[in-house]
Amino acid sequence: MNSTPAPGRNDACHCGSGKKYKHCHWSADQGSPRADASAKPIGRAIRAVQKGVRGRNNPVLFKTPEQVRGIRKASRLAKDLLDLLEGRIQPGVTTLQIDQWVEEATRAAGAVSAPLGYKGYPKNLCTSINEVVCHGIPEARELKEGDIVNVDVTPILDGFYGDSSRMFLVGNVSAEARRLVQVTRECLDLGIRQVRPGGHVGDIGQAIQAHAESNGFSVVRDFVGHGTGIEFHEEPQIPHYGQRGKGHPILPGMVFTIEPMINAGKHETKILADGWTAVTRDGSLSAQFEHTVYVSETGVEVLTG
Ligand code: MF3
Ligand code: CO
Ligand code: CO
Image 1 (cartoon, helix red, strand yellow):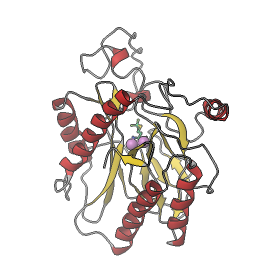
Image 2 (tube, rainbow, N blue to C red):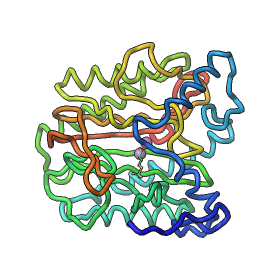
Image 3 (cartoon, rainbow, N blue to C red):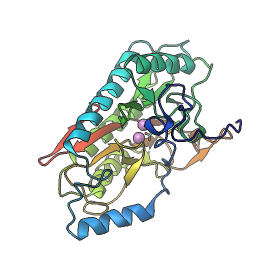
Image 4 (cartoon, rainbow, N blue to C red):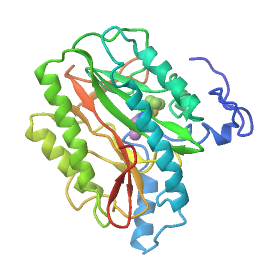
């Protein structure tokens, strides 16, 4: 990695969008998606809720209707970018080609890719193949018959973020890999069904964990869902395991991702020498689906659905 200094907030963004850094990747470059990131801010948010502060003016935890409109558009773009890939991901296609398709479509929509330049991340999106749990980096390697690959996109449109990922099957895929992908999809759906004002993030984690484990699979602990919309990764964290009634309260105005990573073997992960690619420690297959959701007064809206 080279050592180009970060641009000033009023300089042009490092991603080449032509926008000022502060209006483009600045906020994306501030946070971290790792599970151990931010115990302190979560404590503050819970105290605010306990004090009866509705938090409507908190720009991060509770979004204004105008912010929700912006996040809805960015999220719709995330869905469109993934839809664009349906039917195109076949044996022989490289993950670099996927990165280029999405880069073009993102620019054509007047957006930029949040991952590009995020803490030095080199590409527009993540492509996580087979035993890769998340944060696989697009490269010149060709996808081959039988691979399963997650593609994770996060466009920034008018300053708002939408974060979504889904699995693609490359040609004919083994029955066991298809079962893993199917159960992971069901885990996301079951998690979303738990989202209601007055609930807790533990309700989501419990539902996901129960479904994964009853199918003989395990839930990754090292990476979690997250608040999103104004910045890439906001509080609170959304673990995909846990206990009903426990964890951060779910309240109207919140926008967060649910993005279960489910392993066919054990849950432990390790990071490869590139500093990004997370793989299963035991080499087993891993699958993931991700949606960004909005908690309304009455229920849940799947913004990337
Ligand atoms: N999109 C991922 C998420 O769901 C984060 C990717 S960070 C990157 O949170 F730098 F690896 F792109
Ligand atoms: Co995410
Ligand atoms: Co994502």
